[in-house]
Image 1 (cartoon, rainbow, N blue to C red):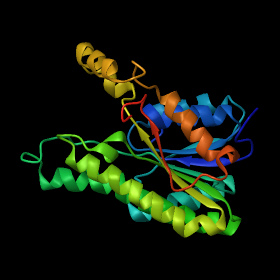
Image 2 (image 1 turned 90 degrees about the vertical axis):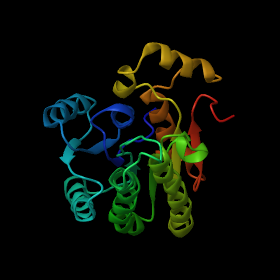
Image 3 (image 1 turned 180 degrees about the horizontal axis):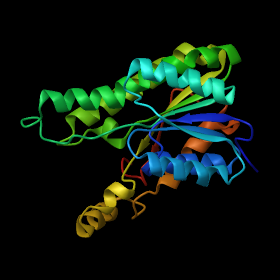
Image 4 (image 1 turned 90 degrees about the horizontal axis):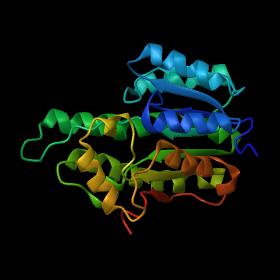
Length: 248
């Protein structure tokens, strides 16, 4: 059964990692996919081709979610190309880790700007079309770090915690129009980024998780699938933890 048949999703930062996993699962479930990327044009084009093989409409857009005007333009272009935006997934994000003592103002500002401001930009950009349609699902990619904090990640934790507050507020504002807004808080997810880490360190993290493994992008994508589909029609304003029991 294809849970997103005929829907269109806009996914930011989907050329790799979690975003890529979400786009793949959505396409398998009949969803048309508009996705953004910033740097690797070739990889994005190859990904466009790969997803199109699922028989859905796919288009990549080179766009910076943290730029307000670019976000408005992106939403307009997606609407023109696809005719609708049923699902928005705010997934674009970066880290600039350091202890507060050594963290520069620039590194604090950059992380908050890209991780949190981008959520405001895109949500505002798709709000009008969802209000018109009187339906929609907005999913914000927060983090376990936004819930419990983490030494050396004050900027990242602040941006991801802010995202949860934003999610709850939007859920309250738009609920009467049948627009739902939820957050996902992934724990330790194994992606291209974690492949570069020392295996012993990674194994230590796995051992500390109740399910004794790191998560995969597909684990997060399946949670997004639930929140994007009609299966979660009565779920809004929530933060779904996809962390293998890390915060239990």
